[in-house]
Length: 217
Length: 217
DNA sequence: AGGCCGAGTTGTACGTTGTAAAACTACGCA
DNA sequence: TGCGTAGTTTTACAACGTACAACTCGGCCT
Image 1: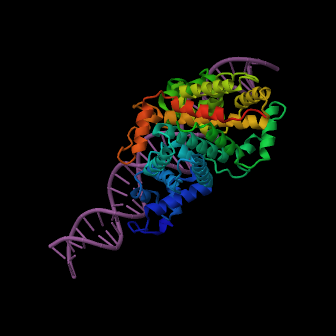
Image 2: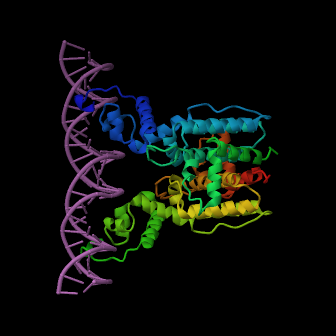
Image 3: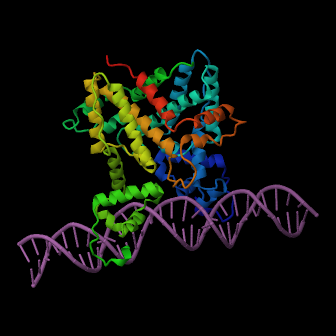
């Protein structure tokens, strides 16, 4: 424990270790549980010790988002298979976010202009360039897909700080309690949706976007 | 001021008045400024007085979201013009959110299963039903569009609690500072995007979705 | 070998938050 | 006239991020 160490004694803290513990803690107990004090005790250290490795809490949160962004490389693709490539990219990204549902609000709330995110975008624009899309058009497409990812992750996880202590997740369950007499169509839709896999809605929107994207001029 | 009134004296507070002031305050100074104490002094009242009209802060925030949801009715449409109807709906919704950029994180972070939101959805499902779409398919489409709205509003406003004290808003400006040597395509795309209107990216994604939605079976 | 300097850690403190509990005032109704 | 109750203030508490200062030690310089 933190209290059992004398005052200036080293604890072997490192930036990456703090970051890992922070992600784990947020995954386990939600963003609301991620306070500096709490993270400190999790590491056997006082809260203020963390400030030697991150200038403030925001920097730590930024680092967490960046860690997600660089969790896996983006696929490369070319002239003939750009739709497949984009589909791959989008699904992979969603999987990563879905693995850390509690971090989704974080991703949503930070501009994401960090190194890793920019690198990812640049690579995508490069692939799309070889597919024949000029940068502006390519960026439009990537933005649309990123939005889809983030929104679906948010809905699927029940955005918010609550630890989601019980009750199954997923946006279908949120509509399950709709009063059928007042909203018959909604209730019917919710019932029908409940019989599908959790990503059916995502796949529908993804397919719509990909077929809606015009081919390069 | 709150201090100038004696202890149990009525202040004429009402739920709607509190709600309006809360929205105005958040619009003016950002979500972070919306504390119960601050909202109190804004109304010439102590913070705890508000708890007689809203059980807690979350309820107030929910009410704010609900107010946005019911700000304008959804368009009705039928068999031949469902794409136009959906485009109308989506644009109107975006306009409403864009008028209150600071509230976007709120909309994003609440499940939105309140009365007004459900009513809105039910109406859309009804129109889409006459257009030939079964409820489940219709709901998929509405979800996709809602996601687009919310994400674009978030990006366009720079999600976060910051009061955005200066500097032009818009997602293009966020990419303006990208180092051109490290990310040439991104920089080029940002430059090209800056010459368009702020909703060009939104319109692109909207068009893609609408043309990507398959016609009813 | 001796000294010391700075990185890393703790202790303490301040201001701010949401809100529980209780005290109080004044109005409406019996 | 009296009382209940709706509405407001007062006070209080626990938790938050973090500024600041005290402290301890490993490693470098002479």
